[in-house]
Image (cartoon, rainbow, N blue to C red; front, side):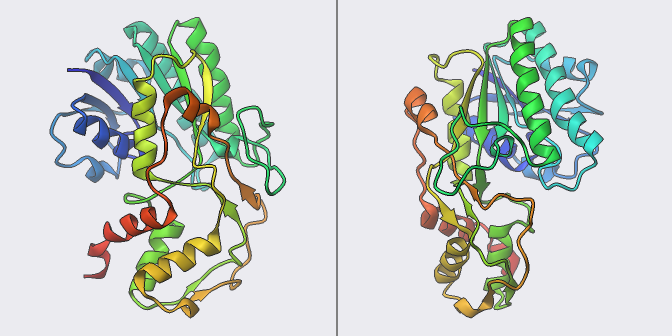
Amino acid sequence: MRTALVAGATGFVGSAVTRRLLADGWRVVAPVRRTSGDKHRLGGLPGLDVVEVVGYTAGELRGAFARNPEVVFNLASAGVAGKADPDDIVAGNVTLTLNLLRAAGDAGVRRFIHTGSCFEYAAVPPGELMSESSPTVPWSVYGAAKLASVHLARTAAVMWKVPLVVLRLFGVYGPGEAPKRLVPSLIDRLRKGESIDLTAGTQVRDLLYIDDAADAFVTAADTPVIDDGRILNVCTGMPVAVRQVGETVARLLDAPQDLLRWGAIPPRTEEPPWIVGDGTAFRTATGWRPGYDLTAGLRAAIAARPDAFA
């Protein structure tokens, strides 16, 4: 049986990758902080080996790496919601990555898959896809920390002889998201017949359903031809306006469109109006393709939230 170590297994994407690995017959080792409030995401998963840690220090990680994982998935992160202290964002992205890579080097893992972010890129003109060669000029502390973690990971991987792949995720959505994020908040409010204040909805994003994201990570683990140190975008390449998301959710729920109060709140001035990726390189290297279009993904997200309306 193959063994994988998943850092960040209690997170939104990390828990989905964990479930997918277990379903595929992997043994999964998950170092989890004792203070984590998201352990419920890992409940009832047979084959999961949870190793409680105080923090992701090199010493604390020894117990998890003693299980001899052949692949490490680094999905641990901090500050994606933009509210964390900058020191915590750096510690949860940069220092954590360094500690994981050091332990992975000592353990002689076959592959280390590090998670990057579309927030590492500079803003581009509407209509231009962000490729791996696009300028990296982050517009947030989180994006800057993710970019720093990628630079450090590539250097440390060479130094400690760890085969590394970096997957830059774009807008992942679906079951397991925080309730205050766009899609779950739309579902909850519209199913209750409540109006929801929104921006004008002109922001354009690249949205990837959570199961497709998990599939991409597992595919990367099993694709031997990816060059060490390579950075690859994981995205659909399809532009979707926020307004399209809201109107599609309302249509699928048969909710009145006038519950969507477009323009009731201003957009966040720091966020670029257009974030859409070019995923050609990853698709070419692995053969991976997203299985969900927007309608299918939103329908699945709606089906996963019935408990909110009981």
